[in-house]
Image (cartoon, rainbow, N blue to C red; front, side, top):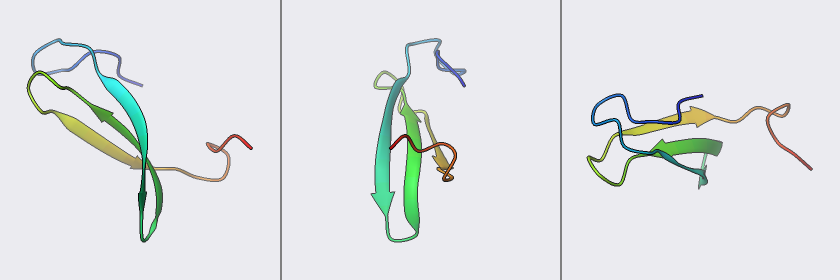
Length: 47
C-alpha cells in the first residue's frame, strides 16, 4: 500500500467509499488530487 503520493510525494489519506457495486478502499492526495480506488474483498473487511 502506498503511503506517499507518487506524483508530488505528499502524504496520502486513506478512507472507504461505498458505491452501488460494493465497498472500495480509497487513497487520495489533498495536495495534487492523485487518487486510487481498490475494491474491498471479504478478507479485507474487518468485522
